[in-house]
Length: 120
Image 1: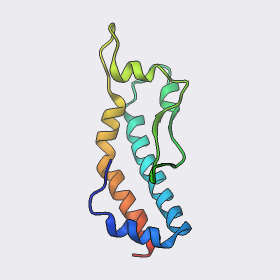
Image 2: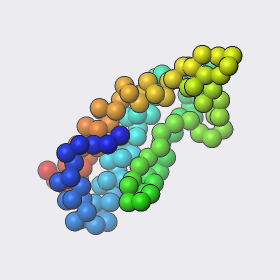
Image 3: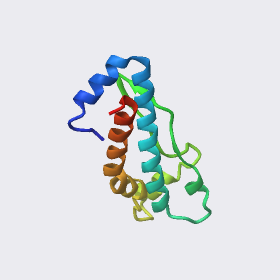
């Protein structure tokens, strides 16, 4: 997800250094939790194990871009079969639906958390 019109807020965060980084990390985790809740609502339930193992990663940074990853844990490899289908089973894209249903709210949470952290 790419946020438009965030240049000023991100520049202010850069000026704050480590405190800005903490604000940014908190905003990303909060947004990740919004997406997680939405995905959990979409998970097809048979045993409940998959639903219990939807997680939000710690904040990761690559090439100066921060992110969190939201989805099933590594032990729930069969989530890919559900999401994309197999030759014997139709796809049930619960992760995609959860993301699409929550991305606007997640963007708002990021903006709100950054503004709150900057005292705006």
